[in-house]
Figure 1 (tube, rainbow, N blue to C red):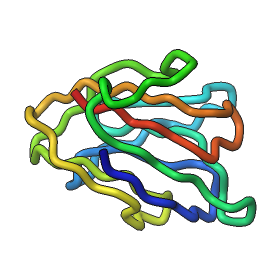
Figure 2 (figure 1 turned 90 degrees about the horizontal axis):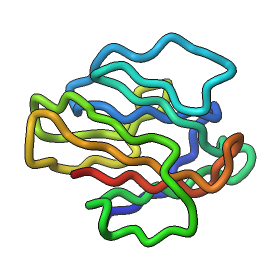
Figure 3 (figure 1 turned 45 degrees about the vertical axis):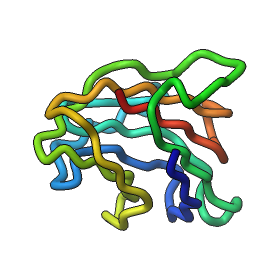
Length: 120
């Protein structure tokens, strides 16, 4: 399992192939938004202490709540990255296929200070 502490200026982070993708159109009523190539999710901004991100195989996470996102992400380079809106890379990981199953858990639907990303 990999982890990093992110200090984004805004309360949002993105997961995509390391070469990027097409981000979702902002929807203030959706907690998690996605396109086939980018997933956005809420986080705690730097002013509130930031967010710790954990990334690994889904089976590594034993959490008391259900994922807020389950879907697939196009990963043609077989590497993913978590980035800020300013495109600063917070965490990267290798994946096995060019289409990766993703599960995301957050500890708050507004300002999550912990995010778990399962990659299968």
